[in-house]
Length: 469
Ligand SMILES: [Zn+2]
Image (cartoon, rainbow, N blue to C red; front, top):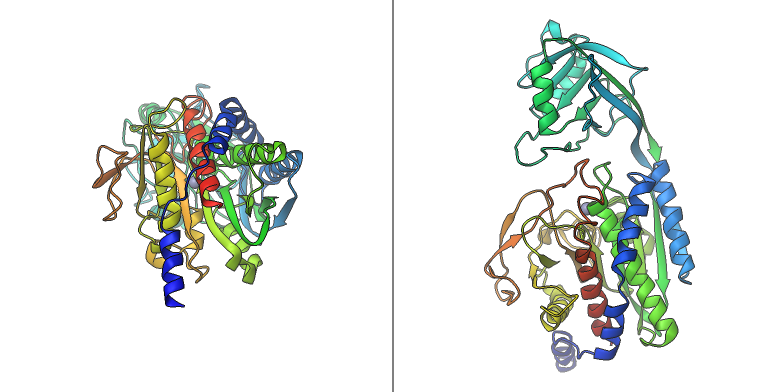
């Protein structure tokens, strides 16, 4: 028994042999224009937050899309939680000059119509004074810690405007979007503004009024998760190809994460089409394409819903931020520190190595250790930055081209140093200049670098073809 197990382990950790005709067919069917269009259409729906009207519209759009591919598709209603969405808002100086970059923080309360008060600039929110009562406060500092004390104080302002993190050149022209404590009865609305609008507000402060209006909602809502399935020949296993469908900051979320959703949509389209035409054999194991209604929460709900069926899950390929990259032109495959990810990641790495520098493919690539913060971690234990929702050893990776809002230096897992990166021992993990900001639009991300989504779809699709043998 031991010997057989050992043989199986050896087989598993060896990269499968490629079928180059199927791989070429897959790669040439991935369509950049469709990926771009999918992102634009998703962003046009709204922020797509779980449990909100735009989240519901996005799930209906996705269910239609997958059904249109001929794939059996289900929409699941996940457990309700407090959700927020903002319909319209305006921040302007009394002169009429609009603060165009203003974007409401999540769970900001509505104003009753337009409210007007003296514009006051303060370094931070820590020591409320009588003059703040009824004012519009501008601060370059964050609102996190001071917010509750200020909102409860007798010197409550009518609104707070913040250019936090106020660190040029980041967030120069667009607002970093934050969130207030998740409750329906916050008292003071907060708007993020760009660094430059922060300068405008600082120089206008003390010289007149400002006006704010906001129509916002905070109420219980159920995220909707869409799962479409490409059937396999054998029922005992399946792969999960997934992405979070919400914008997660409450902003436009083109890169984070319409790009990941579009990558899943394109993989489904290409695989459904090629298996139908016979260009690619019907997969051995089914592939479930899932778009989570809400990052983490819907993945947790899925794991709970699957119950014992989760033992059939052969691997998770999650996409988060496949639409941009600020400094490097790299594709990353996450969680090489997880021992049971070895076969999955060695396969993806071999795909990356085989196609590197070929026209229409990538140049720089690497696997990297777990960083946490996206849905593949719903399937991993806490020791690998996972959530511990399951004790099963499910291979789970995230494929991406940017993470967070600054270049991260990450020590590579020993034994995983890649030929595909100039810095194999201390990796440079690329980032998005538009991370969680009002600037995360198609124009700034996926329209500029649509090739990133193409790379992610090709690497994962070819990887799946190799794994599925
Ligand atoms: Zn994300």
